[in-house]
Length: 354
Image (tube, rainbow, N blue to C red; front, side, top):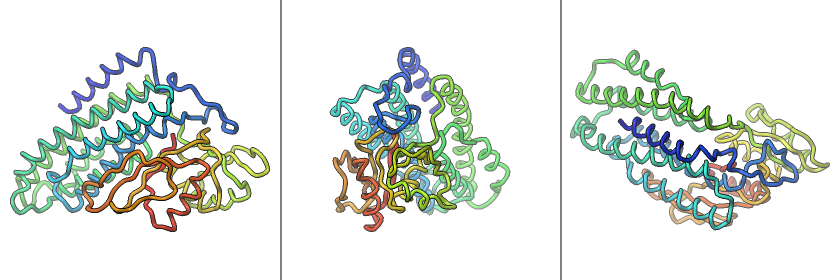
């Protein structure tokens, strides 16, 4: 039912808006002194990707929570509220900065946010009725609970780099029914979890297949790398190691500046840290010399340094005393900030690479 609502909502909105706009056509590529046009992405996307990534952070928090806690206690509605707060914050900032309205991207964020709102709402209702009944007074995790926690973590690891609809839900469903023992303690809980997991996996497999087909017909295939202009050029060789081997030189801009590509999405954060550790500084990122959005994790009383404007602060709802700070940093100052945060043991959650 959740997935049917999501699918209907997605295609209705697509029919209304995609007839005259798409992410590609909505973006007028900004001028860049260094980066080739095919690698340039507009600066507003560093903001608009934050709500997208919140829907990675939220499942990641859920996966971590399931390792020790009951699913019924997870703050689903708190995460719904935080998603829409984050979208409002980045929307207001893009309007304040007078960036061209990126209709296709706003539509996509609206769809995934509405979909998640429906899904989390129904999941909360289920877990706090049938799920809570099956947990019993003295809850003990069954093999199905343990499987659900492993599946949640595996799913999060996957969506950090690839679209969710490419995940192999049917492989997980097969494992549930062929690997997880059918018998054992707490028979009621085992079979309630089996029902819940089977329903979720089947629905997401079908919905993911349809969304994959629709996405392929609407969106261009995204580049899986981000172009960065860095200096000094002589340090680029020190950044490339066995672990960080996906640094590819495009060319020399001048005697002191090189243009290279590094992995996009989740990989960008790790590679940016590696470049900073090799004492390289950023000149451009995806054609942008202005600002980039970052998210940092720290204690609730902590005030981050080396940032420009803080867009939003959010409590980590399942970890007492921790918060997320989302702020902008100048591109030219990013490497210095990464080096400083590393020495201060600040957790850099993500760099939003447009």
